[in-house]
Length: 127
Image (cartoon, rainbow, N blue to C red):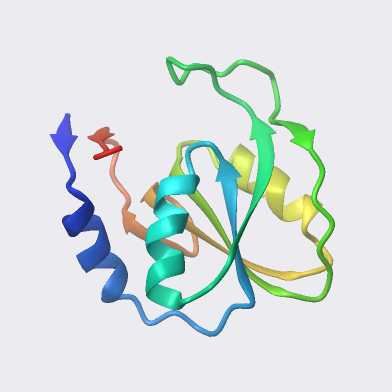
């Protein structure tokens, strides 16, 4: 398992040419720390969406991601943030819930519109 430092993550984020967004939405809990790094870099506010799919050991807890707390936002350009996207189910669920907005996705590792890494290797994050 490769360890990542906050500086490594921040340095890679700074190299991405992001378009203008109105706000960042972090998928609670995994997306909160990467969202903070992005919010500082992009000078944007963060809101959270509460979706649960995996347990503390990262094993799927449900057949499909479940919305825990609703969020109502319309007509915004959103950067949707999570730490890892293995199957894409959580990001797809969140994007459906935010369908009245223009949504782009960001993850540290996995497939998204913006990702720092896209490998099968697991990372130990600094948080």
